[in-house]
Image (cartoon, rainbow, N blue to C red; front, side, top):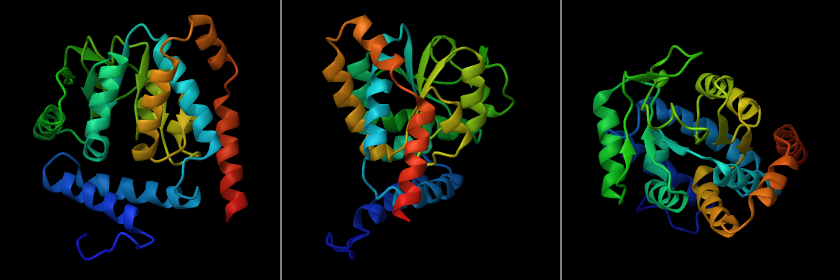
Length: 245
């Protein structure tokens, strides 16, 4: 990226691409993650590469849901670990929730690389998937979870999620808060709260909102959630995309 000036209109986007490429080279991100990132980048372009009002509404509801949780857990895949390692560690500390590695393409080596990557950025509590606990309603590698992490969780923050596990978590009675740039994806539709935004923008804002709401009463937090509609949020995102085309 040294040959691309910061004044370049695609500078930030190109910088994120380089971050994902570096993640692949270090063994943190799967090669398939490059394609997933490119798909998200297309939707980010459609929403103007900015955090829009519908995302802010979801961030507020997501923060409330996570603060109300008895056992919140932050799920981490390769792309998220590569893009926002420092923010994940900060969020885990603020929320007092463990980070748990969970990836689609099975690889003990890559799981270990993600764990080590998070530890290098200050993480202390990084749970790993085990065969001791498995999610129901799913057959992929992501069914293997930690018994004291996702398996036990009542609310799971799962940015850049795949739809089959999001649906499985929802069927198991867990609340899913996700970040997904595609408002039409199965993840976006299955989650309890979908933040339609780029995770590099959404996560710092979510951390700030959790900190702002930490002294809010339980009844006030429940009121925030009761007033939130994920369907309306997704419709607002779609309307924004159609209007801006």
